[in-house]
Image (cartoon, rainbow, N blue to C red; front, side, top):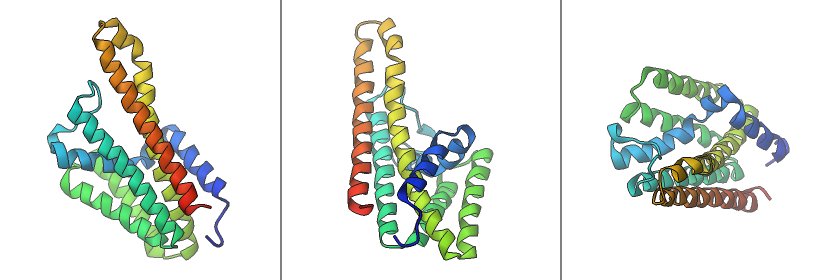
Length: 203
């Protein structure tokens, strides 16, 4: 990757954005759309749910969604390794457009997605190779960091709700164990994906 910044700079910037309150929410749009796309395909537009009781179907949907986010990150880093940075922008613009056409209907979210699309499309239109290169690498790191953070969020949620499940009875603790195991699986999978990306594309 000629003329790029040191990897630590892209990683640090993606990390900062992934933990900054408002900015984090804005730039999580593409990982969220991947997850919602899976939910839409499996459960339909009106049946998307968050992981509360960790029913089998809901856990399956979340697992596939998080896994696809990781595969998307791997694919983006492959594009980075082959210097096809512009295709990263095309992919994210296409993902946003498909979401607008198929399942996103809330006005605020529509505006949110459109502004993200315009930002990416504007950079593509300017066609500055240096900007496209740095932007593509940064977006790949951002998608990866958001996917890892989302996985650990599930694990953190299960730990935080331990006392709640314990207070509702003995059998309710099994639900907590399910959540804990599910969170661990997602977290370990995310870390492995990061390890794979480093070894396959960044060495």
